[in-house]
Length: 79
Image (cartoon, rainbow, N blue to C red; front, side, top):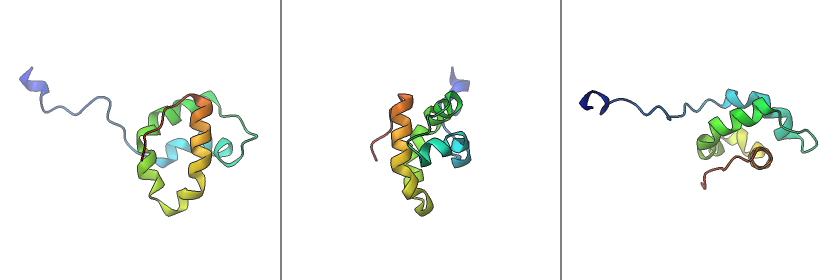
């Protein structure tokens, strides 16, 4: 077990905003339902929301992202 003590967590998330590209139409328009791929990506990237909220160009998209996450059943962190 000592060999594993320094190993990175398997659950670590790499925050890459482009991973949410399948969600962009649903984020921008409440009349567009998120796809299953979008929901999968939203689940993967959810831990990154607080980091993304600090990016000025993303601020207008946060409310749409929260709505899409809710439709997908994804729990988002409290920032």
